[in-house]
Amino acid sequence: MKHSQMGQIVRDVWRLIPQQFDHCRLDAFVVMPDHIHGILVLVDHVIPDGMGRDAINRVSTHTPIALNPLPIGGITGHHNPMLGKSLSRIVRWYKGRCTHTMRQIRPDFTWQSRFHDHIIRNEKVLTKIRHYIHNNAIHHS
Image (cartoon, rainbow, N blue to C red):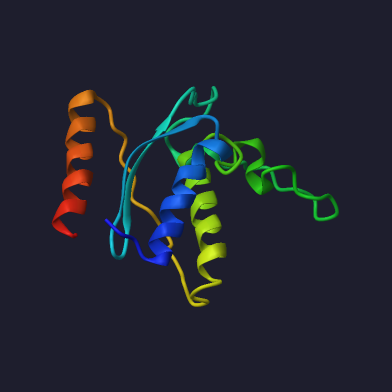
């Protein structure tokens, strides 16, 4: 499939992810007319002790004194998900890097503010999602 200039940027920046995040490997990926589908594999991804799945448990209840600067990670300190090896950090970097370049072509470019993620728990589901990504590109070309 031949990509537009914007689509080429999206694809090229995708390929840079493992250089920026050594704990991330790329899998299936496709650029669609108005969105992308991709699989990122996080390796050596361990949730630190005391951090559950519940976001409320990751937020510090400590209120910094106004005269002192905020600790690393802001109010959440070292529990800030943007400091670790998280998917959110990768997606934030990816969108930011794409946006910087794409706004040179189209100054009003913006991403949807959120993203949809899904944890792939087994080989059967991985195969199904890879198939979906591959077929999505074929049906839209």
